[in-house]
Length: 358
Ligand SMILES: Cc1ncc(COP(=O)(O)O)c(C=O)c1O
Image 1 (spheres, helix red, strand yellow):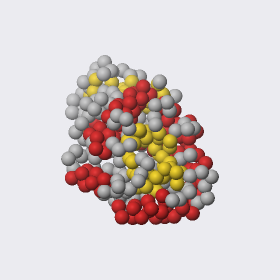
Image 2: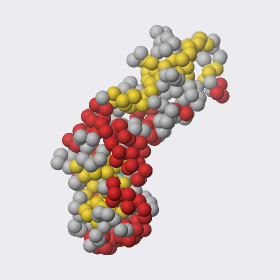
Image 3: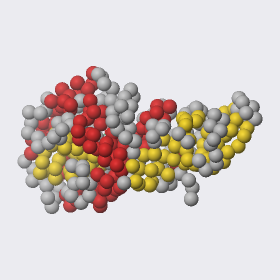
Image 4: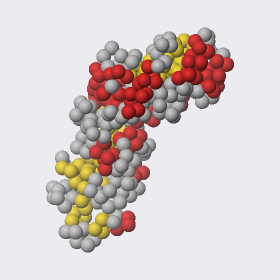
């Protein structure tokens, strides 16, 4: 069996969920498990949080089906709503909460014949300009949906564009636009993603929507997950599957981009870009072996990458290599690659087995 595994720590996941709840006392939380729970496995994550979470949020009905199989009763929110008329039928049958973010979705909902009414989350475009109604259009839609037999709860949702950049002027502008529709009667209101859960109590409303923080990564560039009290959930580990000595001047890997400047010991690790390790990672990006950090050497291949073991003479064939997890945080690797932890976690590919520890 190829020695590469993503170990998912359910105790850490539960710790992070409870931390989110402690940040917003008395509020409910949708655990955001879209994109296969940010790569961690949506059914497994939902099951691990089933007795804790007030609800779950996914992007679309395909994702909701997976989660519904393991949590029969929890509230389950479709963050992008329904894409086709028939999805409203399924949403009603499965007891899903739906976002309604434009006129088209509102019209399909109003025209549907449903076996029971839906909890609807009207989406306000408070400044991200991705989905949602303007304040004016939302007022108008609110009036139409309020009397509809297809609507149970009528709720309000919006999303921050810059909550991860503390002090950004758009944060206050979005809060203000959100507040401007609060004279309307809503059963529930939600606004906060992880960054807002952690730093913007004014945005907590009735339901928070933590995503990335559940998985132990930080939404902030300048605040580490550890500082925030979060525990890493995924640890990606491979093994040293080959070790060789190189003379000065010898090169490593595709493109011969890394050249030994001294007598060097090079290890080959069982992980590559087809597993989700970023090909863009530059030489020098840290990996951890035997508790020590060692630098990536040369280009990442599809199934393997190379590491410079010269300063870790104890390393031997078969040693475990942490690509990310506890010693090399996902955020640190993301920064080295010019991306965010969200992208790396969601891009761990299907061929990497997930191992769950309770
Ligand atoms: C609408 C919505 N709410 C909540 C979240 C969770 O955000 P985060 O992972 O930053 O906590 C997302 C994720 O992008 C989202 O799209």
